Amino acid sequence: MIALEKASRPLKGDVFVPGDKSISHRSIMFGAIANGTTEITGFLESADCLSTIDCFRKMGIIIDHSMRPSNGVPVITVHGKGLKGLSAPKGTLYTGNSGTTTRLMSGILVAQDFDCNITGDASIEKRPMNRIIKPLSQMGADISSVMGNDCCPLHIAGGKKLRGINYRSPIASAQVKSATLLAGLYAEGDTVVYEPALSRNHTEIMLSAFGVDIHNEVARDGSAAAILHPGMPLKGIRINVPGDISSAAYFIAAALVVPGSELLIRNIGVNSTRDGIIRVLKQMGADITLLNYDDSQEPKADILVKYSELTAGANGKFEIGGKDIPTMIDELPVVAVVAACANFDTVIKDAAELRVKESNRIDSVVENLQAMGCDIEATEDGMIIHGGKSLHGADIKSYNDHRLAMSFAIAALAAEGTTRIVDDRCVGISYPSFFKDLQSLL
Ligand code: S3P
Image 1 (tube, rainbow, N blue to C red):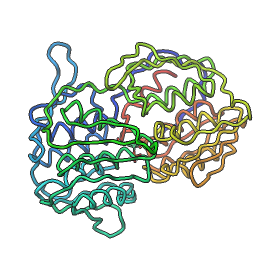
Image 2 (cartoon, helix red, strand yellow):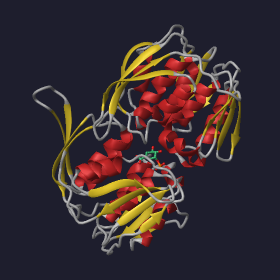
Image 3 (cartoon, rainbow, N blue to C red):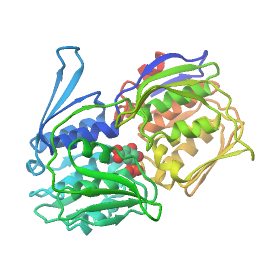
């Protein structure tokens, strides 16, 4: 448990957050199935990404940690063994709390020549896996839920010949898209995944850097397509992982709820499929500026955020929904906290996916904000936050969800009295030094 008080003065200074989780996972997985070595700097050493490393080590991939002699920068080297170089793991592959490991790795494993089982912690065993079982089965894979409940444990029977498909995903999900595209690497014919709105495209960007013929385009009906032509082997590369915008989000929010604050958050990935939090908060009037913008394949920038009073616009109500949602899906809990501190109503809609994250993030956010005195109601696909009430400290249940624990640490900075976060250690899933980094600004 951790106890936090209302911030007694503005937050000022420079902040560095750890590497991007989505990019870190992919760097290990794609490095493992590439030919030659992949060198990764800026890798996120958190529980989720260590689950990915663990699983690939169990399948015979050598992954070393070292320091670059010239500058002491930590480097992870993945000794890739090519598309079919993985070996059968002894025992079940354990993915911990990580949906990304579970779903993306499944897309690779359905194409191998061995059988395997995959499972994770109690939260993973409740998360829907039918969303990947469906497209992968259509491709000819043999993947099933052992308990028949569409959840983990999953059993994969190897040795199947796969065919490319055109898959229309009903949801915008990078995990579904990526699992399908990864299986597509091994399939006969092209694989195309259509989604209602473009989800994070790190898989497309990184596979392309590894030498795969893959791209995004807008389909005639307006949906987002990712198109993969298989046949090229992956070639090991160097990857520099930028800071995670999902971790930066807590500091952006902190500066917006503590009057007088000014933070410069350095070297953050600002890919347009991830930057919804910046766009939406700026529409609310937040003073956020991107500095030192580096327009590489995965764009990066320093984010300067200054405390600013937020406003709702013409009708006194601010709405977040539609195509913005996939670009800020993991940031919605902390955006709800910012909205709770504002003076107007905020409606979050089209975000039913929040119900199937590490916790049911609609119910868990609403319950905890209510405990802090916020007037907020849950809806099927989001929440309505009636701003204008001052928050007070409360006992927060994180439900072992890292993003809940961090979001409510930020709410604590704006709340009168003491806020206690039970099960705070779950921050280690994506940001092990979060509380230390936050405390250093208080
Ligand atoms: C992720 C995709 C998103 C996101 C998750 C990481 C990824 O999940 O919420 O934290 O790395 O592909 P969905 O694909 O289920 O939306």
